[in-house]
Length: 151
Image 1 (cartoon, rainbow, N blue to C red):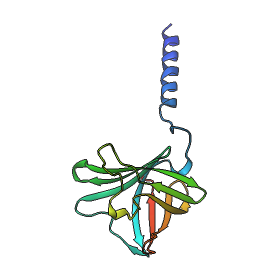
Image 2 (image 1 turned 60 degrees about the horizontal axis):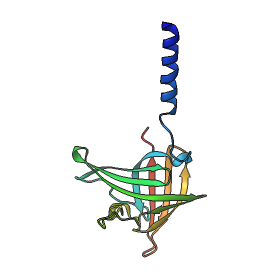
Image 3 (image 1 turned 90 degrees about the vertical axis):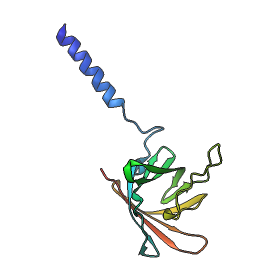
Image 4 (image 1 turned 180 degrees about the horizontal axis):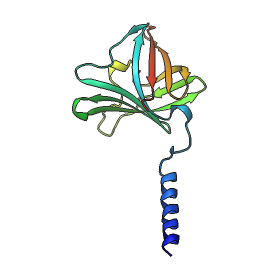
């Protein structure tokens, strides 16, 4: 009896562990998860991502939602949420949303993303590294985003 009960408990635990982590609405492929923004260049010149206030910049993809986060001292963070879609090598980030109080979700200027839809070309995406390129429509500046998965 004890052996049967132990076996049943082990099966239940295995089932719970095996189904506990999913990709909501299906697998989104190589984009899924947290990415660290390692560097950003403007026309080939590095732009600062961190400073005395911002320690780390990350992007997170799940379903059709993207969250860009600036991690601050004392584990505080600023989060910017939007949506994304992908067609082949074109990644569209949409930060046109507002909350009920009229607050915007547009990322800070350090990211050089548009307050509406920003089209980025995927130059590399292999599951652990991502290289995106975007040309700003107002001034023609070419921005290159280099991201990696920290784990």
